Image 1 (cartoon, rainbow, N blue to C red):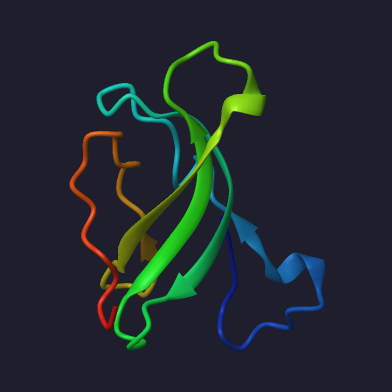
Image 2 (cartoon, rainbow, N blue to C red):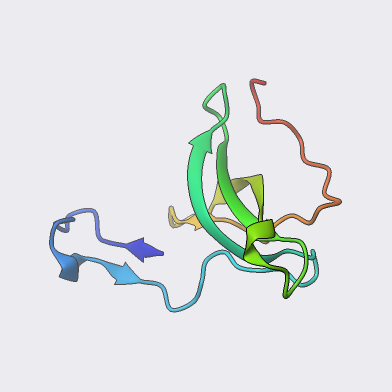
Length: 99
């Protein structure tokens, strides 16, 4: 993830800092692999933040079998996103607020 100070120039490459580790990655425990290509959206009532991404249900599966997934995320006290771990296929996903 790239971050910068509020007062920095977003057009200057040196303003940006990249995290050393992925901020969202596979979860062997939840059976989710090869997470990637995410985007962000809000719930219909604008109260929740959600991300959309794709992933595989098992290791070694051809990437053409990636499934689109969605899950809610929160925020750390410092204002950075808290994506948590990817939900497994058996997770009881609640609909976004305002649905």
